[in-house]
Image (cartoon, rainbow, N blue to C red):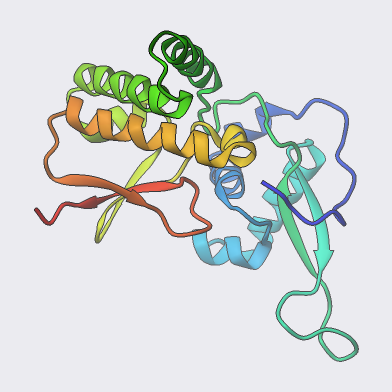
Length: 225
């Protein structure tokens, strides 16, 4: 995820994961990890119905603990004199923090890619075609093990949440890889999700592209067929 370069320096010390034991800080941190852009305190206040002073306390605690950094810039289309004071925004201090918030599946992606390369060398199909087949089979296996769709998605780090149209996937288990290799990794994820649907024998949902800026490139909508 690329952010503006005028942010405050990233601390070199290890982030203090103990800070996330507090449920409010954990929720705020998860929201910032999921967000494609830095967020202001007021945006988080509205999202979680917090008092501004409470949100500030927890956000600044995470800054001190090395989990977040801040940047200041003016928001909105107006610039120059009279456009207002710069806003303070918060974002994760590191691209990846070795915590379970949220889940990442880089080892799984590596295993599937290695299997796809081997299959491509043996069959002559493209790596992308082989990777789609490997990912689908893995998703099918995981869907069978889980037994139902929401459990399978939760177990595999997608953090599903229901809305009026189906399931929103609030986390990408392959986030950093998807940022650098979008087409390949999003194709892998779509095949994995389709396999999961079929492994669960779920006929209610279908995999579709998520709106730009979503945490995951895909989402699940209720099937109309």
